[in-house]
Amino acid sequence: MKCPACGELNNRVVDSRLSKESNVIRRRRECLVCNRRFTTYERVEEVLPMVIKKDGRREPFDRRKIALGVEKACEKRPISVAQREEIVNRVERALQMSGEKEIRSYRIGERVMRELHEVDEVAYVRFASVYRSFRDINEFKAELDEILSEKPYQKKLL
Image (cartoon, rainbow, N blue to C red):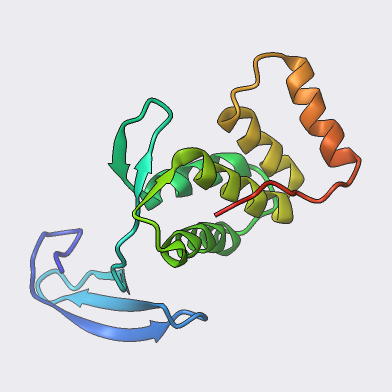
């Protein structure tokens, strides 16, 4: 692993810990040249399905895109970094468990919306407003009315 400070490859592991779910190992490392400490994460690389975009293009699943969308939706909300990470983990795990080779992007978006709906309704509406590309205030109001009527999120998901 290359040191982020000096680029040296020689380092040692100072500490290793498993995540709560035992699917990620967190390692504290120390560079043997500049003595800077840094953290790395190790996880099993699973084969994830190709994502079919709205325009028909296919691209590999990118966890960072989900994380960025969740981050934007949760901005200035009382949602911890750990909760955000767990949302992304659950979406990724659902994709892995689906066993599908290809999946439409809207199904991933719907799964993210369901996860956000369970955690924070404001974050959910933020994500939905971008994901569903509301054209006017009436579409936005309809989504809010559905939340306010306290109907559970019932879309078919992954």
